[in-house]
Each structure stands twice: as structure tokens, then as C-alpha cells.
Length: 81
Image (cartoon, rainbow, N blue to C red; front, side):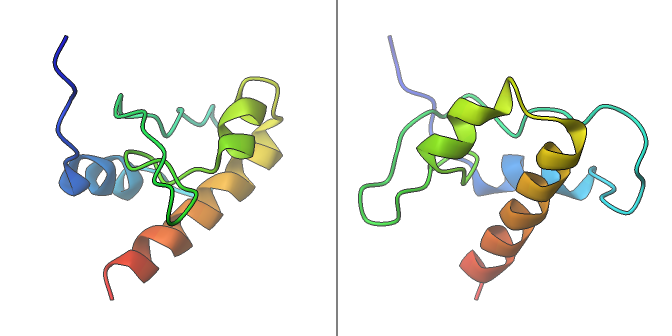
């Protein structure tokens, strides 16, 4: 089985479609199917979540998911610098 090649643009597109200002609707999972942890950062190379954030996602409230998305936006923006 071939590993999916990380495509930063794929996560950027997903992130651009998330409106964190609205408090309505169900937030999608940040997972883009590239599930590999970067040992130097502690983040998934696909979705930028920590292992704890990944594990917590399924049981997280919409409020908690919104907070995770906000953190992911900050990580993503910092990675572009």
C-alpha cells in the first residue's frame, strides 16, 4: 500500500472552508488521510494535530472542536512563515 504524499494545499483548502466565527453546524474532522506524526514537531504531517487532539476528536464537543480548529489555523499560519 502506497502512502499518500503530503499536500499542504489540501489542508489549506479544508481550512479555508471552515468558518470559525459561526457557532452553528457540525465541524468536519481535520484529517486529510495523511496520518503520520512528525517526531520533531509532535504534529501530524497531514492535519497538524497532536496525538492527544486526534484521540480526543471523536468525543469532543463542538466547542472543543472549534478550539482545536482555531489552534490548527494558528499552527498552519505559523508554518507558512
